[in-house]
Image (tube, rainbow over all chains, first blue to last red; front, side, top):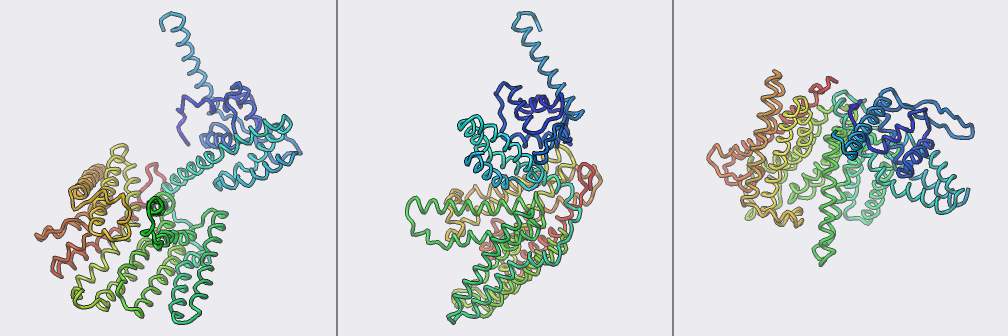
Length: 113
Length: 483
């Protein structure tokens, strides 16, 4: 298992984890959610998405679960959910970003950090 | 769905086969489903969105595939590190025969075409057997690609080195200008790729596969020695040269044990080389006025140099990887020491090569212009040899000190192995003789027969000892405690 201290996350990784934070999703839903969350800046190809999902699975930040929206006409679909470790990573990253933002706001508003 | 959509989906499903097996098994179905959804949605929106989806997917695909292969390689390296001495499952008899088959087929091809030398059937039999070998090779590529590169397939891939030989038979010396330069460059690139592949297989993927792959290359080392050996003897020597590696490959695949495999490869090369060196020394067709008298020392030289050089080809990467894993047990200093030894070995090797090229300007490899830059005999190659030796010494002392703390006498003995070759090469200087660099048989010709024999005996002893000691490096416990 790889180390957990991987902050800062890449933007793509962060948005994938964020897209899974409320509930599990399958590949296509993750793709769309990331596009929406990043306001269209990050658009995954299927290969890039699954490469990223594979690494997150190996790091133990996400896991496979049964598809929350099974569709009988579809082929077998897997969904992905955040693990407890993945959730901690997301929160740590949010804290880090918040701290940076706070420092930046203090500096630009003129008060000492 | 439109024709274009169906076409794109069909192409995508075929291209998914280019991903590594493990990745494909895990994600291919999902990827196809997701891509199908993307294409269906885009098709509804119009042609431009469809083209955008396809462009994004297909343009990024080569990079994604390479990334996944790189990830696989790193993953496999980790598995090899952990389980390099967990005995893998021995190959079945069927698989083992497949491992020996390329050598046996070439032995049959050679025997049949030689036996029919003066008949009209020679060309026909040669073409039929050649086509059979080619078909076998292509079938193996396809089969092994679909079946996760089984160990036995490495025997077949070793013959890729033949491409380099086929290339070298082209009349490039008559080509002028750009064509000649491109050809020389291309030949160098192919040769380098073959060597790097061998290095990777031996060190990072599976040493047994690496040994199987190296065997055809080791066979090639003996061909120059056979020059001037008369035909009937030469026929039997070449037949033996391919038959024995065939049987060895079968045994290696069946046993699947790195220690035994190293000994089998070195042993087969020795049993091939001794009769060849004997025949060249005592039964050659060189007129008396042009040849030196046949002596034991001459035979020892003809045998030892190719045996040492071909043996070092497989032992070097095994040693380097083994020392690296050893160094990893001792943290940063251990890794730095191991790297120093490995770098020293490489620099030392290049020093010897550059010196060798100086003496063999007419030889095949010297046609590669880039190496003419060294122009040794000069300070550059001698500096490389001694700088490499110094790096080996410093790194080895570092590893010895670290191992001393761990009270591991076997480790201390093991790290002496890389020192043995340069020391053996320096050996004649203790007798007051001028021998410039290791591997320089021309200089050794000045020595008396008994000293020549002694030097080559030491070299052979070094190789045999290394063959026993180096696989012991793979017995060392894993740094994480995994055995």
